[in-house]
Amino acid sequence: MIDPELRDKILAEPEVLLEDRDVMNALIGANERLMGSNIVDLRGIAMERLEGRLDRLEDTHRTVIAAAYENLAGTNQVHRAILQMMDPLSFEEFLKTLASDVAGTLRVDCVRLVLESVQDAEDPSLRKLGDVLYVAEPGFVADYISAGRNVPLRPVVLRQVLPQSDALYGERAGWVRSEALMKLDFGKGRLPGMLVLGAEDPHQFKPTHGTDLLAFFAGVFERTMRRWLS
Image 1 (tube, helix red, strand yellow):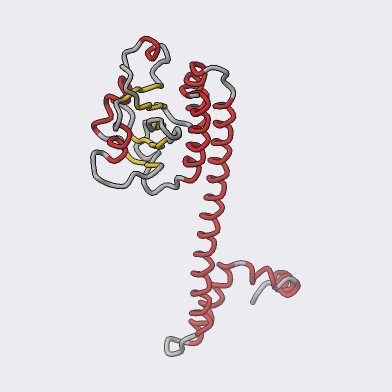
Image 2: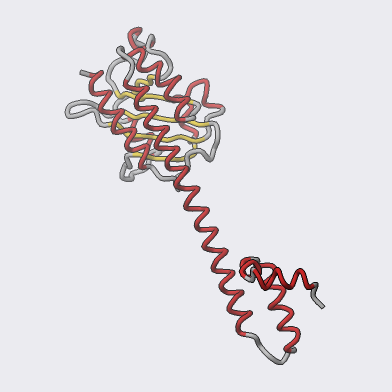
């Protein structure tokens, strides 16, 4: 017989049993055993299906919440990086900020600004600007983004680093494993450019990741660059 005190507690608060999934499963299982193997209890089957749906809904809910927090964190990172990018008062300081503050905020290991130019890359006025700036021949940006293939160029490309990237990354080529490539339009009459974010983690930039935030960042970046180029 059930303990009288426990029985009175159950009768006083029956909803406690209904909210406990394990207790309810045990009660339904005991009921099925009493009915015998020749009788199918549709209530038990229905409850199992409802539990399965509930589990899937909870998993979906957790996934949506996690994605929302991740998107919010990414948005905040990009906003902070944009504010840092707008602080410098000289182009040289601008490039130094890219390599330090902006790279740290975006949590990348390497930043490269590629400018196509007919000017010699060994020019002393360019070399003093540091390793962030990479001066390339006309056509380099399209060839690098497309990996030499005849395909339409997307504004933002996420991928693992290709073998031909050694010249771009220089001494860091040995450990940069994934990259984000943002094609830059500096306006009519100017050669295109490219902003490159490199990461040691081979999975930090993958083709399956969203690119909306990086596209926004690239849009602000190219408008800032137009000011410097003027």
